[in-house]
Image 1 (spheres, rainbow, N blue to C red):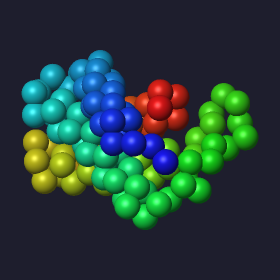
Image 2: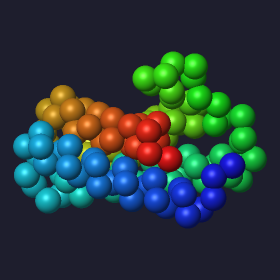
Image 3: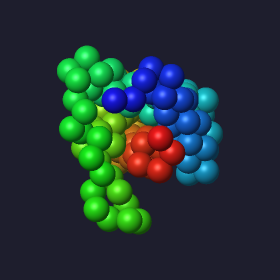
Length: 121
């Protein structure tokens, strides 16, 4: 089971990577970048807090694929990030934009959280 320090470390890294990816994708509005970064931090933080509370040790088993060793824990972080980003963008700074715009930025935040989870902690 990972500790709170490691959970916080992953959340911060996810937020930073999400912000970078969103800026690269021409998300210039501060609210758009901040919403994606916040979702990329809150999603994994919430999921890992649930796993800690439920003593979900079995979720940390990586798939036997060397180049993409994803686990259920990693997947949960991605799902929670996608949900947080979709809600954040849909109710926040992109509420009046086409859905594909919200989805595109939500997916960037999700990819950031997922990659950090898989490869960096």
